[in-house]
Image (cartoon, helix red, strand yellow):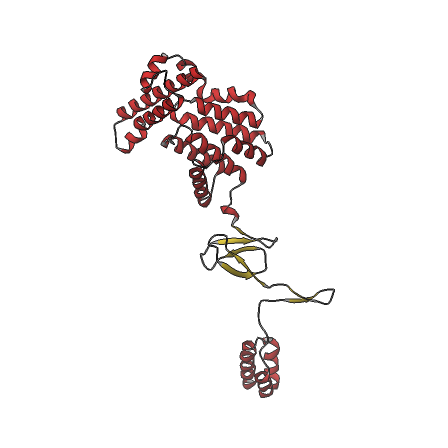
Length: 317
């Protein structure tokens, strides 16, 4: 009995190596002993692989799993994988990509931004860049809005930052971006109203609404089709402040504050305004470790410069 058991074990070891049915060959080894051992030694190995075959109704052989190749959407290298839709890892860069049922390769969905997010971020960038200086306050406001509204992953946040930085210098107009956003969301009123509200929040980050900013936001509400709500949304951020400061300084004082004269062109006035904002911006003082009193004084100075510029531009309109 013991030697039959030993023969069964030996035969099973060879059967497993040749990828044969180990249960059947254990029984054969137990019953037939050395005869089963000789037979298993003579038999060739079975073919192994990851391809499963079936018969199609037209008689043509069908492979349930086959190898395909594609281009990694991250590093651009050629990769080979099974023809099964799902997540695959690039052996070259280690990034996970998606092989779709349409036969194409895409970046992982957790890295993909919805088109409307891209358009909204571009609007933020254009508005923040309008005065020529994207302040630290504006960047912080954009970051807060993005994190709260979109709740992006780390990879998505990196993409959003890249889109924001690139859009500041792109040739796309604010109006064309607004029209693309409107089309991408199918005119959904809630998203568009939230976008306008966010634009006002970014404009308010520096304490005042400049004429150029107001013109841009007003054009967006017109494109979005709810111009009647413009004043209501604006009042959430500038309702009382803008009314009380409209005639705070005379035009002569405004021109002197900007270092200009009434005979100067709009371009000269705008250039001086941008330079004064840059020279007096509180973010520069903060980076140098200035006192709270100095930073507060700088904030008041910047607000005064902006009010002077707004009054001059309003008078010239």
